[in-house]
Length: 127
Image (cartoon, rainbow, N blue to C red; front, top):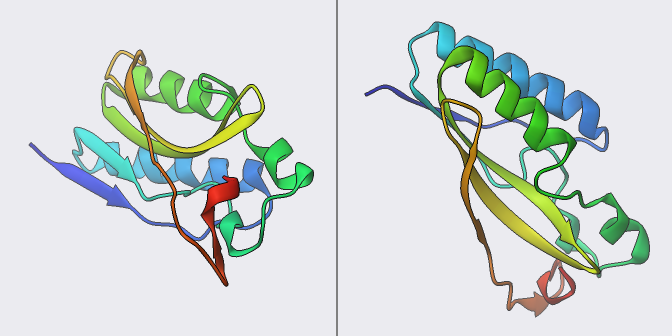
C-alpha cells in the first residue's frame, strides 16, 4: 500500500488552500497513492493562537460541507482514501476534526480532538 502525507501552508483564503489540497491529492494519486493524509488544519490557519471570537467560530464549516464534498468527489473519481482535518462547526461549537473519506467518497468516520490547553498562543479551550 502506498500512502501519501500532504503538508501545506494554510493562509486566510480557504478556497485557495482547498484548491492547493485538491491538486496535491491528484498528484499523489497519479504517483500511486492509495491513501492520502492531510496534516492538522491544512485548510485554515491555526486560530487558537488567539482567543476564540465570533468571527473565527463563524469560519468553521460543517461536516459534510463544501471542503468535505470537494474531497469526497475527487476521492471517488480517483479511487483513493482521503484523511482530512478541518475546523468543524456543529451548532454553536467548533472542533478540530479528522475525517476519513472512503475510495467511493463516503464519509467513513470522524474524530474530534479535545482541547485543554489555555496559555499564551494556545487558547484552545474556546475551540
